[in-house]
Image (cartoon, rainbow over all chains, first blue to last red; front, side, top):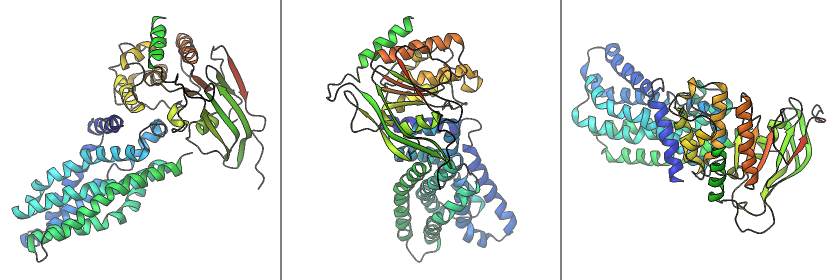
Length: 223
Length: 234
């Protein structure tokens, strides 16, 4: 069963990292949002430093949603999804493997790019560590909540906006506590650990809820 | 011919379906199946039994519900009424029919960007690696040496052969085949008939929706379609 899980993970990674797979798209979008923002706000370094974490988080949230609509839809169109129903591997774990592959291909590069982009937003070095930690915990949560929307998009053959509409409200708590933890690390007065632990809790909940709900959506919609 | 013999030997070695369970010969039983698509009732009160070593050909005009019946058996659609089960010696009572069946639909389930061998290796890994190796399977369906090519550059017939190879890389007793010989040339059809015959000889079961004769011996026919246009009463 572990072998089957890893096989799904490897295949989805290979597809995402291949030219035209769309893994780079998220990072480019992230880069575009963050680079453009200082020009729009103007040369107020203090303001930039204060809202920088929020801008990085919004960029990461939106970039994480890119490509989710194709996650199950592509498998549905070529017939792979039908066969996924006939595996010994439970559909929940198929969804989890696909989510993990999607996060490694699109979420992890965002986390890696964040320290560099933090420089552009005048975020202090000590806050950069906090920012990376919150993104590392928060982006998997967004991707796994996004699995629910991805399953609906795949099942009902309505991609694109449906994912954003369905998933965005679910990710608001992640955004709130992600930004709160980063701000706490910069200005206080709440210690960084307090909101960060809630963020970790949200992430763990999403890791369980996402695949289970996605598999349920796929099962209901089959026919 | 050599490939087919090797296939027989490999299937015999795997011996997955010669368990010592009770309850007689393995059989697929459908009882009182009904299927409604939209407002159209495709079939109702459909009963059938397929015993190990035999094939059931599902025939009928377009829209009669052949594909729907196969999807019902594979667990990909939910019947309006009735149930399907696999019972008898060698059937796993814990698993559903779907987990013991190969479903070969209209779509080949390949990723066009990945090489043929990579696609097949993926299905071999997730379906349980209980059959032939990737190279052997490609050899058997006549794609030897083409495993490195991306599926995108294969012809329609070659893609179909690759989908057929999936039946060989993992042992499952029940084969559900929806128009399996579409796009296959005459030689490939004959070879596939040998592969199916070998599967039946090993005690496998086949349910195939088809318009063309598949060249199998020992088959029965289930004809759908007489009630195909009956409206469902409101």
